[in-house]
Length: 488
Ligand code: ADP
Image 1 (cartoon, helix red, strand yellow):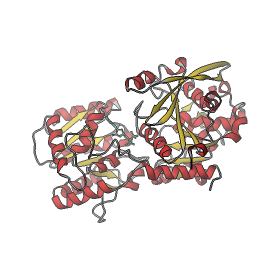
Image 2 (cartoon, helix red, strand yellow):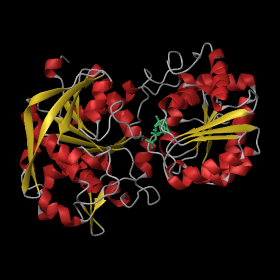
Image 3 (spheres, protein in one colour):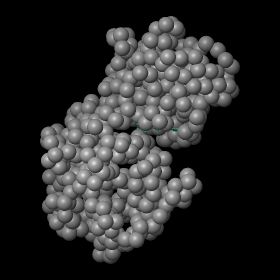
Image 4 (spheres, protein in one colour):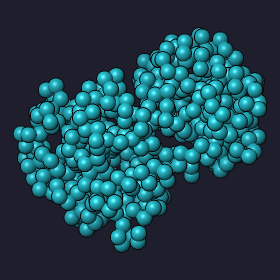
C-alpha cells in the first residue's frame, strides 16, 4: 500500500515515551505508531502539551514547530482555543495541544479526579475531533488510550454537537489498565455538552457517578486490551473492577493484543547503558553485567542468586506479597534488588526492611531508567508477583536480557511466560495462588534452576529467543483497522 492510500490513524494518549512516560501506556504509544508506520499506515499521535513537555522535546534535540491552525472547543459555556505544536518522534508525527490554562500544570494524569481535574481530557477529546480541520489531515480511525481519551467515542455518540461527526470516524479504545476508569460526579456532563442519554445504564452512568472509561467501552467500535488473557480476566467478577458486566455485554467487540517490546531499546547485544554486551550465542557478557551491578549496589561479589523487582510499588504489583514473605525469601541463598516508586507506605516499609538487611536487600524508590537497564541485565531472576497484570513489560524485558521471571500466572504474564518445570521450551517459574507460600515455592524452583549451569543456559536462551516484537502486535491492530474500514 503506498503512503498516498495509507490508512490514517490518530492515537490519542496522555503519555508517549520518550517525551513523557508514567507506565506501560507510555511505552506502547512510543512503539506502536512507529511499528504501524513501518507497515505503511499513516499513524500520528495527539497528546496534551502537559507540564514542560515541549521544552523537554526541545532539549532532546527534537524540532518543535507551531502549526498555522488552531483548535476551538466549547466547554462550560465558554470557548477554549489551543495552538497546535508539531514534532517528530522516531519518524512519527506528534501533535501537542497547546492550551496553557488547561495543560501547563498537568503531569500526564490529574492527582485526584474531579469534574475540574478531568477537564483537560474533555478538551483533549474534543481536540481529537477538531484536529483534522485545523491541520488539514483527516484521520479515519481514532485510536483512544485509557480513560483520558475514551470520551472521544462517547462524544461521537452522546455529544450535542459532535455526534454529527459520527460517520467520519471509526474508533478503537485500548484499555491498558482497568484499575483506572476516570470516575467523577455527574455534575460536569451538561457543561461538557453531553445529552441526557449519556447519563444512563447504557451510557456513562456508574452507581450514580460518571465513568468515562465505561462510556468509551460502550461507544467505541472496537475495544482492545493489552493481552488475550486480560481480555478474559476483566470479564470476571474478580478481575472486572465493577465493569465485568459491561465488558461481558460488549465481548463481541473486545479482543486482546499483546504489547510488544521495543528491541531497539531493550537489547543486551547493543544496549549503551550496560557495561558488557551479550546474546543467546554468547552469554558470557551477562556475568560481567552482574559483577558490575553488584559493584554499583555496593555489594561484594558472590554466588547468591540475584533476584530483582522493577515496577511501580502499588498493590497491583504484589508488593504486599513480597513484604509478607520477606523473612522467608531472604532466608534463601539470594540477594534482592528492588527498584520502584509508588505508594509511600510501601516505599517506607521496603526501605526500613533494607536497613534491617543491608547485605541481602537493596531498595531504591527513584524512577531511574539507567538503573533499570543495569538491573535487567545484571540479575539472575526477575520477581513479578502481580495481583493482576494487563500485559506487563517487565517480564518481557527481563526475558530479553536472559533474566528468568518468577511470576504469578495472571493476565499478560500467563500469556507470555512458560513454566520451565513443565516444558522444554520453558522461560520461567509460575505460581497461581496469591500467597507468600506459593510465591516462595516458585522462587525456590527458580533458585534451583539457575544454580544448575546447563539448565540455566537453556532457559535463558529460551527467554532471549522468544519474540515479543511490536511487528506481531502492530499486524493485529492493522487487521482491526482494516476490518473497521471494510478493507477485508
Ligand atoms: P505498568 O505499566 O503497570 O507500570 P509494565 O510492566 O507494563 O507496568 O511497565 C512498566 C515499565 O516501567 C517497564 O518498562 C519498567 O522497566 C519501568 N519501570 C517501572 N518502575 C521503574 C523505575 N522505578 N525506574 C525505571 N523504570 C521503571
